[in-house]
Length: 171
Image (cartoon, one colour):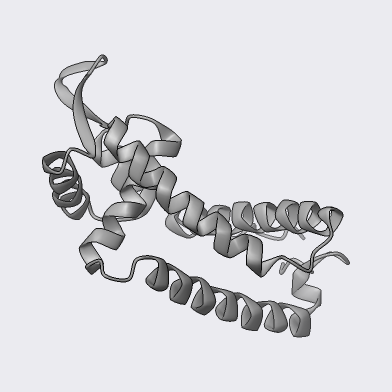
C-alpha cells in the first residue's frame, strides 16, 4: 500500500517545492560567493580549516573521528586539517578523559580570536543582507531557517540509514 501524502505535506505541493529548490540553489550560490569573498587571499585548505575552527569553537573539544562525522568529511582529511591547525597554534590536543590513548581537539585562545574575527565579518555582511527586514521579520525568518536546517540535517541522516522494508497490506 502506498502512503498518500497528508493535506499539509509538501509532496502535495510540487510547484512550491520546485520553487523552494530554485531558491535554495540561489542561496547556496550566494553564500558560496560570500564565503569566497570573505576568505579571499586564503587557500582552499585554509577555508576548509576555518570550518573546522568554527565547528570546534561551537561544539567544544571533540575527537577527530567525531569531528569528521559532524562535518561529513573523511577522518583522514579532517586529521590533516586539524594537524595543520595544531601546528599553527589555533588548536590544541587534550587528553581524552574517557580514553587515555585518545586525544580531544580544542580551540586555543588564538584560534578563538580567528573565529571571532571571521564571525564579525560574516555578521556585518549578513546584517547588510537583511537591512530591509523588520525585527519581527528577521526573528520569523531566522526561526524558519533554523527549522529548515534541522529538516535538511534530518534528511541527510535519514539517507544514511537503510530504508525500512515496505509494510505489507493485510487483506
